[in-house]
Image (cartoon, rainbow, N blue to C red):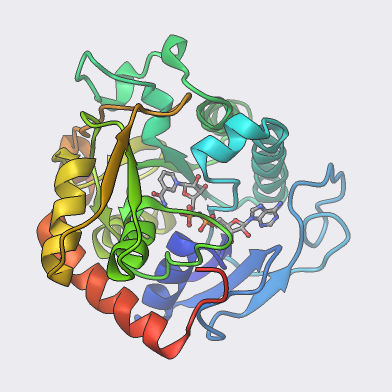
Length: 320
Ligand SMILES: NC(=O)c1ccc[n+]([C@@H]2O[C@H](COP(=O)([O-])OP(=O)(O)OC[C@H]3O[C@@H](n4cnc5c(N)ncnc54)[C@H](O)[C@@H]3O)[C@@H](O)[C@H]2O)c1
């Protein structure tokens, strides 16, 4: 397959691109930043959030190579709390999705859109079936940007026959996720701080989330891509997660156990806009894609601590 990946310098983009390349597929990345982990992904640097109107060869006046089989659209401002602080970034997310959809429409390319469990809002009803998302529960500008992105994708399917898959991810972690000076993600942040004996703050003592080890996420996306490109699976919205909940308190305990230390923990209430309970129903991913996540949080933390420790030994961070 020849796959165009937007957001290819980010966590999921890096893992997906390298996994596709390892299987012999051709990947072309687009991002506004260089990749801080690898030079193995051919990348074109472009800000996709500009209001472009020209989609002849690429997006705007930037020329892309042609002959792709599908576009994986991952580029976004992906941090919930940052979009609460700066909601204009939510609008940029929507503009990016619009631009990428126009590119797909122009070149008749199927799209895989990266949505989020955030579209469900804060669920105390414990229903996460894909057809039951109730958008009245929108928690944050980020969540609104993903709902809008999905709505645009569905409208392009309806009006222009554009084939799509929408994946709703949930707390992906494990590798190429530790660029903490750009983006604080809870698991690499806690690994870093706890390993240095620094205090950490858990926002939400009772918060339960569905943490997804990145290899499981990538396996699901790759199965989806094969189906989308072959035409066997299209126009579906699919939860991609591990399918079990874990509290942040347990996750922290796993990290500390793995590091063999006692962490210095402060507990604060959840922050505005954050989801406090999510456990995905992954039945659809299983039945459509044969998706069977392999990595429990305990095992994923073991692998994350090993990867992060090794990375930081060889690449000492400046700010953290
Ligand atoms: N990682 C998760 O746990 C998770 C969960 C739910 C949804 N998602 C979604 O999956 C996608 C990928 O997530 P990720 O964790 O890899 O995020 P990430 O922040 O690591 O990667 C996103 C990439 O998009 C790029 N980008 C941002 N604005 C851009 C612009 N204007 N033009 C070009 N590139 C731009 C960034 O530079 C970054 O490299 C995102 O859309 C995110 O919202 C991720």
